[in-house]
Image (tube, rainbow, N blue to C red):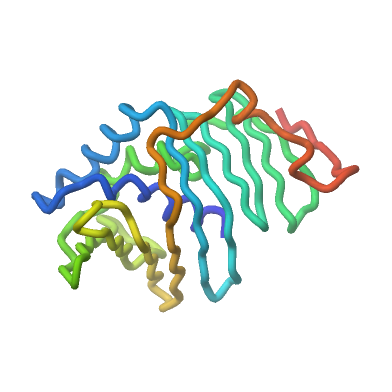
Length: 201
Protein backbone atom coordinates (compact mmCIF):
# COMPACT_ATOMS: atom_id res chain seq x y z
CA UNK A 1 0.00 0.00 0.00
CA UNK A 2 2.76 2.46 0.95
CA UNK A 3 4.62 1.87 -2.32
CA UNK A 4 1.41 2.42 -4.28
CA UNK A 5 0.76 5.68 -2.44
CA UNK A 6 4.26 7.00 -3.07
CA UNK A 7 4.27 5.92 -6.70
CA UNK A 8 1.08 7.83 -7.42
CA UNK A 9 2.01 10.85 -5.33
CA UNK A 10 5.24 11.17 -7.26
CA UNK A 11 3.00 12.13 -10.18
CA UNK A 12 1.59 15.15 -8.35
CA UNK A 13 3.75 17.68 -10.16
CA UNK A 14 3.06 16.09 -13.55
CA UNK A 15 0.20 18.57 -13.55
CA UNK A 16 2.61 21.39 -14.33
CA UNK A 17 2.89 20.02 -17.89
CA UNK A 18 1.17 21.68 -20.82
CA UNK A 19 -0.51 19.97 -23.76
CA UNK A 20 2.79 19.74 -25.63
CA UNK A 21 4.58 16.46 -26.30
CA UNK A 22 3.81 14.04 -23.43
CA UNK A 23 7.47 12.97 -23.48
CA UNK A 24 8.42 16.38 -22.05
CA UNK A 25 6.27 15.81 -18.96
CA UNK A 26 8.96 14.25 -16.77
CA UNK A 27 11.40 17.09 -17.56
CA UNK A 28 8.73 19.53 -16.45
CA UNK A 29 8.08 17.44 -13.33
CA UNK A 30 11.71 17.54 -12.26
CA UNK A 31 12.01 21.20 -13.22
CA UNK A 32 9.01 22.08 -11.07
CA UNK A 33 10.41 20.08 -8.16
CA UNK A 34 13.82 21.71 -8.39
CA UNK A 35 12.42 25.23 -8.73
CA UNK A 36 10.06 24.89 -5.77
CA UNK A 37 11.30 25.45 -2.26
CA UNK A 38 8.81 22.83 -1.06
CA UNK A 39 5.79 21.00 -2.47
CA UNK A 40 2.79 19.82 -0.47
CA UNK A 41 -0.52 18.13 -1.24
CA UNK A 42 -3.37 16.25 0.41
CA UNK A 43 -4.71 13.02 -1.01
CA UNK A 44 -7.41 10.38 -0.66
CA UNK A 45 -6.77 6.93 -2.14
CA UNK A 46 -9.25 4.11 -2.65
CA UNK A 47 -8.31 0.57 -3.66
CA UNK A 48 -9.18 -3.06 -3.13
CA UNK A 49 -6.48 -3.14 -0.43
CA UNK A 50 -8.28 -0.46 1.56
CA UNK A 51 -8.51 3.29 1.75
CA UNK A 52 -5.82 5.77 2.70
CA UNK A 53 -5.66 9.51 3.14
CA UNK A 54 -2.96 11.91 4.20
CA UNK A 55 -0.55 14.69 3.31
CA UNK A 56 2.80 14.77 1.57
CA UNK A 57 5.51 17.44 1.80
CA UNK A 58 8.64 17.34 -0.38
CA UNK A 59 11.69 19.61 -0.52
CA UNK A 60 14.43 18.40 -2.82
CA UNK A 61 15.20 14.84 -1.80
CA UNK A 62 13.60 15.26 1.63
CA UNK A 63 10.00 14.25 2.24
CA UNK A 64 7.35 13.65 4.87
CA UNK A 65 4.28 11.45 4.41
CA UNK A 66 1.56 11.49 7.06
CA UNK A 67 -1.27 9.06 6.31
CA UNK A 68 -3.79 7.12 8.37
CA UNK A 69 -1.91 3.84 7.84
CA UNK A 70 1.73 4.89 7.48
CA UNK A 71 3.94 7.83 8.42
CA UNK A 72 7.38 8.47 7.02
CA UNK A 73 10.06 11.13 7.48
CA UNK A 74 13.27 11.41 5.45
CA UNK A 75 15.76 14.21 6.16
CA UNK A 76 18.11 13.39 3.32
CA UNK A 77 20.10 10.87 5.36
CA UNK A 78 17.90 9.11 7.89
CA UNK A 79 14.42 7.67 7.40
CA UNK A 80 11.84 7.02 10.12
CA UNK A 81 8.88 4.84 9.12
CA UNK A 82 5.80 4.05 11.19
CA UNK A 83 3.19 1.55 10.04
CA UNK A 84 -0.05 0.56 11.75
CA UNK A 85 0.67 -2.99 10.52
CA UNK A 86 3.79 -3.29 12.71
CA UNK A 87 2.93 -0.63 15.30
CA UNK A 88 6.58 0.42 15.54
CA UNK A 89 8.94 3.03 14.14
CA UNK A 90 11.88 1.73 12.11
CA UNK A 91 14.95 3.94 11.70
CA UNK A 92 17.07 3.26 8.61
CA UNK A 93 19.71 4.86 6.43
CA UNK A 94 18.23 4.05 3.03
CA UNK A 95 20.45 3.19 0.09
CA UNK A 96 19.96 4.72 -3.33
CA UNK A 97 18.08 1.54 -4.32
CA UNK A 98 15.78 1.87 -1.31
CA UNK A 99 14.98 5.46 -2.22
CA UNK A 100 14.01 4.43 -5.74
CA UNK A 101 10.97 2.73 -4.19
CA UNK A 102 10.15 5.12 -1.34
CA UNK A 103 11.07 8.68 -2.28
CA UNK A 104 8.62 10.37 -4.69
CA UNK A 105 11.46 12.54 -6.03
CA UNK A 106 13.56 9.48 -6.90
CA UNK A 107 10.58 7.69 -8.45
CA UNK A 108 9.83 10.70 -10.65
CA UNK A 109 13.47 10.88 -11.77
CA UNK A 110 13.17 7.34 -13.14
CA UNK A 111 9.87 7.75 -14.96
CA UNK A 112 11.49 8.45 -18.32
CA UNK A 113 13.67 5.36 -18.14
CA UNK A 114 10.96 3.03 -16.83
CA UNK A 115 7.75 4.29 -18.48
CA UNK A 116 6.53 5.25 -21.93
CA UNK A 117 4.55 8.48 -21.62
CA UNK A 118 1.69 9.08 -24.03
CA UNK A 119 -1.43 11.16 -24.32
CA UNK A 120 -4.35 9.37 -22.71
CA UNK A 121 -7.09 11.60 -24.07
CA UNK A 122 -8.93 14.87 -23.50
CA UNK A 123 -12.20 15.45 -21.73
CA UNK A 124 -14.33 18.38 -20.71
CA UNK A 125 -11.67 20.64 -19.22
CA UNK A 126 -9.25 17.78 -18.55
CA UNK A 127 -6.13 16.24 -20.09
CA UNK A 128 -4.96 12.69 -19.37
CA UNK A 129 -1.47 11.22 -19.55
CA UNK A 130 -0.81 7.47 -19.74
CA UNK A 131 2.35 5.88 -18.31
CA UNK A 132 3.07 2.34 -19.56
CA UNK A 133 6.01 0.32 -18.14
CA UNK A 134 8.78 -0.38 -20.67
CA UNK A 135 9.55 -3.74 -19.04
CA UNK A 136 7.39 -6.51 -17.61
CA UNK A 137 5.81 -5.24 -14.41
CA UNK A 138 2.91 -5.76 -12.02
CA UNK A 139 1.72 -2.35 -13.19
CA UNK A 140 -0.28 -2.34 -16.43
CA UNK A 141 -0.43 1.44 -16.69
CA UNK A 142 -0.87 4.70 -14.81
CA UNK A 143 -3.40 7.35 -15.79
CA UNK A 144 -3.06 10.95 -14.62
CA UNK A 145 -5.86 13.47 -15.16
CA UNK A 146 -5.22 17.20 -14.93
CA UNK A 147 -7.33 20.33 -15.30
CA UNK A 148 -6.68 22.21 -18.54
CA UNK A 149 -7.53 25.50 -16.83
CA UNK A 150 -4.99 25.22 -13.99
CA UNK A 151 -2.82 22.23 -15.10
CA UNK A 152 -3.08 20.89 -11.57
CA UNK A 153 -3.69 17.21 -11.01
CA UNK A 154 -7.21 16.13 -10.14
CA UNK A 155 -6.93 12.34 -10.19
CA UNK A 156 -4.43 9.53 -10.74
CA UNK A 157 -5.11 5.85 -11.25
CA UNK A 158 -2.81 2.84 -11.17
CA UNK A 159 -4.04 -0.31 -12.93
CA UNK A 160 -2.20 -3.55 -12.19
CA UNK A 161 -1.91 -6.55 -14.50
CA UNK A 162 -4.17 -8.59 -12.22
CA UNK A 163 -6.95 -6.08 -12.80
CA UNK A 164 -6.85 -4.33 -9.42
CA UNK A 165 -6.96 -0.55 -9.35
CA UNK A 166 -6.03 2.22 -6.95
CA UNK A 167 -7.42 5.71 -7.48
CA UNK A 168 -6.13 8.82 -5.79
CA UNK A 169 -7.67 12.29 -5.67
CA UNK A 170 -5.35 15.23 -5.00
CA UNK A 171 -6.26 18.50 -3.31
CA UNK A 172 -4.56 21.45 -1.59
CA UNK A 173 -1.64 21.30 -4.01
CA UNK A 174 1.02 23.91 -3.13
CA UNK A 175 4.39 24.34 -4.85
CA UNK A 176 5.56 26.89 -2.27
CA UNK A 177 4.76 25.12 0.98
CA UNK A 178 6.11 26.43 4.27
CA UNK A 179 8.58 24.08 5.99
CA UNK A 180 11.00 24.35 8.90
CA UNK A 181 14.03 22.44 10.15
CA UNK A 182 11.90 19.84 11.90
CA UNK A 183 9.48 19.09 9.06
CA UNK A 184 11.49 16.10 7.83
CA UNK A 185 12.55 14.81 11.25
CA UNK A 186 10.66 12.16 13.22
CA UNK A 187 7.83 13.66 15.28
CA UNK A 188 6.85 11.29 18.08
CA UNK A 189 3.59 13.19 18.62
CA UNK A 190 2.40 11.73 15.29
CA UNK A 191 2.52 8.13 16.56
CA UNK A 192 0.78 6.48 19.55
CA UNK A 193 2.43 7.08 22.92
CA UNK A 194 4.81 4.29 23.87
CA UNK A 195 5.40 3.16 20.29
CA UNK A 196 8.61 1.13 20.08
CA UNK A 197 11.40 2.72 18.05
CA UNK A 198 13.70 0.18 16.37
CA UNK A 199 17.05 1.44 15.10
CA UNK A 200 17.99 -0.70 12.08
CA UNK A 201 21.00 1.37 11.02
